Figure 1 (cartoon, helix red, strand yellow):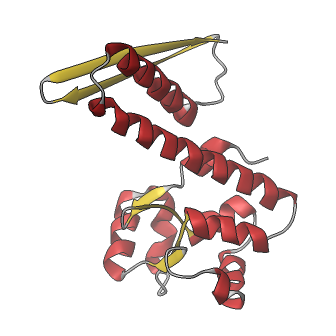
Figure 2: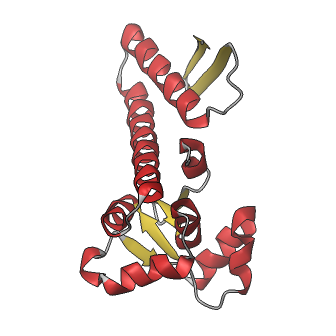
Length: 178
């Protein structure tokens, strides 16, 4: 069964978008990369601009250098495709099966949490109310804890979030008891 952590480890930031590379999408869905790319090729109307893009040679070289799990792409002559959140949702309408459903749910949850965390962090410097800031810090800490959570199942987990905004330093600790 697919876990949210499996999806989170595969999300990359390219061209100011959170994306997952086609080979990682295939791994998540339990199919071959060629099946993913064939689904896209057979349904071009479902993947307009903003849903999927092919990496440039420079982008390919960069992700191979940075991400160990993508080393296998080094010898592939064809640059990989990157699926944006919208592209992954559309792919979910094409791929069928129990693993596809579970994977889609995890992908959706991952992107929702990343987006919610970004909104929470962006709201922090826009408020001067200490109560609201504390609430936002707590929410941010909880989201980070959810995103970075693991299978250790400790009796208690602790996440500390510290943000520095020029002259303002905010620090918040979240202790979650199981």
